[in-house]
Image (cartoon, rainbow, N blue to C red; front, side, top):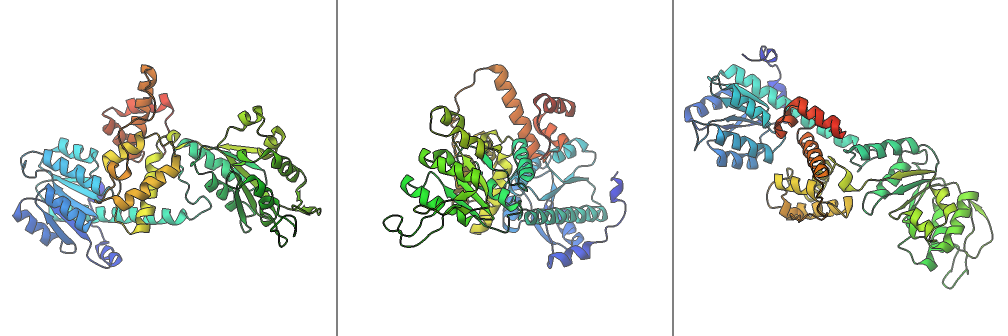
Length: 471
């Protein structure tokens, strides 16, 4: 018996066609020629594509990308069984995860219908075929697909925000974003700590964009990229004739950032000789150009960043302790990519969508081996390394999906072996649960099926390891 929501006619078939401005595509995977003809007639409002086996179904999927697939589970060479049908279902969803697949099963075959839904099928229908009911199922599947696509479009529009480009899918990065939102409206000097490639400048720009100074300039300078003898004049400016080649009065980066935000990247590499002058500016909020005596007041918000351990630098006499306390009114620790459990794959999908659009490549996600490689790799270069690999993969990929070879990821484990069985088990279970939650978009029932455990057992693991279920 069909659920109650299917017991009245669906009124929007004409609206669906009008919105798409062409006949919506429906792929029918069925090896019975008679039933093929019946379904073509039944779905005259659709552009019906027909496939009789797995190979032709995947070929039609790659070529036409239909939003909805109506698939029989009994396909050749196993028309009496379901193994080929379930395999086809898995491959269809791997190629096009957003596609709504309605599986058609034999009468009373409830067990295999449930298996299909567990693998990701949108819905199921049991033979014998009733065309009116089947039309209702397909129409609703198509509408759900359209709603999801519209939701994705709205999410992409919302991403054009002060936190644009920041994907916070892990609990640690969500915490960082919450701190950014709290600190941004203030003028507190902020220190961003994190390994190279973790996105420190992106977060610094977010601090500026969310602040009252957003309409003014964001001026960045890399303290490690400029020679020591030039850094002072770059920061504080110089007067005409201050040194050979100083042909005119030139303001420095600090002055240029007046009323806005000054971002001092890699401040841990700033020479000791300049640290005293920077400290004076932070205390007095005035600068003196090289070769000048005039004190110039500057109203600027200062954000600093470094990948160095400043406490160690202080102990070894390479960084002033009083300067450290001045620049760290608020300190934000940015986690490396390897610690963003559950967030790597979501970030990778976001970057793939971005660069595939830039290069005009119709890529539809990652293969299973690519997903496993992204989750298992240590990412010593953090987000920057992930971004570079995805850029290369977008260019090199030959299929509709990016695989591990396209990403240039092998099977080697960059971390040393952990021989503590308790820690190995905890790590393995945490990773498995987190991945299952990512793949199921936080659906506990589906995640439990993927893991082969019961819902209560999954809840116990989530509570035991403190795993976030927000996906």
